[in-house]
Image (cartoon, rainbow, N blue to C red):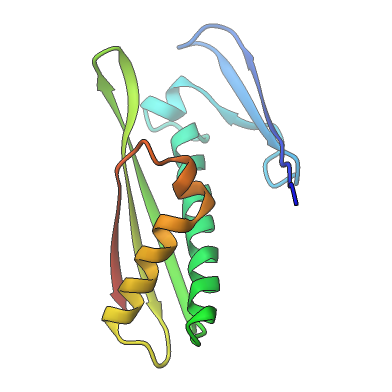
Length: 143
């Protein structure tokens, strides 16, 4: 089985004065603005790092749902946030770290079991695999 998803970016202008628009095949983003100011100066709009974070948090949480089910558990609820770190390094900018923070209520699972299964999901989710060149850390909290 092969699944292909698409997204696109449109850009006009230079780096600092330019404007971009991002769109996704699903329409979740349609000509959504991004640019230098939204990436580096906190101005409204999106940026590649938060999009990577959203994709990673979503993929990881879905993978964990599968792994929990295989272990006989069902989440009452889970919430994952992803912090993607962009830093100036020798040769330019690079994503240097991703930190996943997970909280959840899993009836019947203690914190050690939840943490073990979450680490399995972190290692196995497709987005984690795609981002394997970046250190990925995880903290888990049972609520």
